[in-house]
Length: 457
Image 1: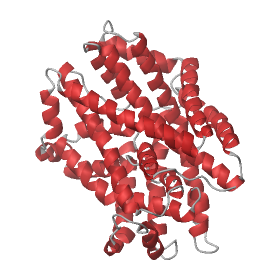
Image 2: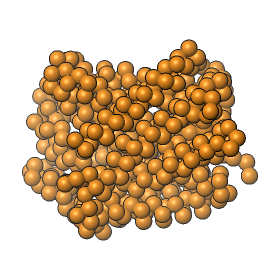
Image 3: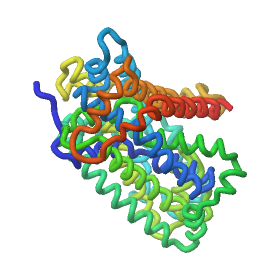
Image 4: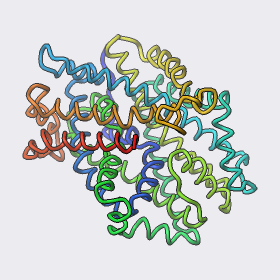
């Protein structure tokens, strides 16, 4: 059976961008930007996108395109004879499952909030305490969460079943276009709110003194490295699968730049939505679930036509989350189709059932299993799953891909460069071999260690 391919270059760019664009752009980026000095932190973040995200993304794409299979099969095809590099691929696939186990739950929350605003269940009569209680009542209600998680996974599996071109590619294209339009509209609306000026100045006027003296320069640098690294969903083979569907007409460097620019645009737009709006209504930006499900609903309930704006915002968040769910679910299904010969429909249905069952602990961690606190008092099973993916699997997977592409006992630098620079477009510079082979791995290790220390400290 001939392997499926994407129908267009635009499809490859938007699918890959959709995988990278997720809740981290709208959830983690504004919070961490606010914590580490606003505009000054954004400049550091952009710098490390170039130094870290760009080369790792190209390497993951190159593995996928050269191997023409899922991450396990691709590495098997490229690794030296009798080596065991493909074991990294199995860890990456496990990371895909782990990501969907909690990401599907959060997507279910987004769907619930969208319908809450559009139906008027969340409205101007809600006080700040009421909005907080609304989220608590959702997480305490296991059957409701399970139902919303099922809706998120049914949408995801249904799109993947339709096929690569007519389902995954076509629908993700539409979602990405609508997402960008909604984010632009929301950003313009927030910036025009009375009292938005302080939030805009904080976000646009760099203050390196605040960045250095408030938290310390080294901590701010590691935070910027971590955000630049994690925002692109690198290290679990989700980019490699789209590389495997892409042709050889364009270099991977040029396409990676476009994808990173799209991802960064969404992150920056989220800041223009959140900082001015929170400033206008005197609401603390918050962190984690409280940003999306408490702080921002408090803004919308105070806003004129807040129900409409709340519904628009959560619709945008649903598209951002679904684009990641679809990309990661496609990666999982591709593994079973490539390695086991399963038809697409069987792979999607079986994995829908498996992930639905595996997602239940994240749901129950807020109610029946709330006594399970893997990261210490106050943490949940969902927090633990997110920690494993974000702080363990993503950095270590990326580290393995970098070493595999730059050293002779892996795939090797010369083969990597040949693959990445095949086609027309921006060429990956060969002269930075030393940086990629030796300095980049050290930076990734430093980010990994820093993240572990910060969590347990």
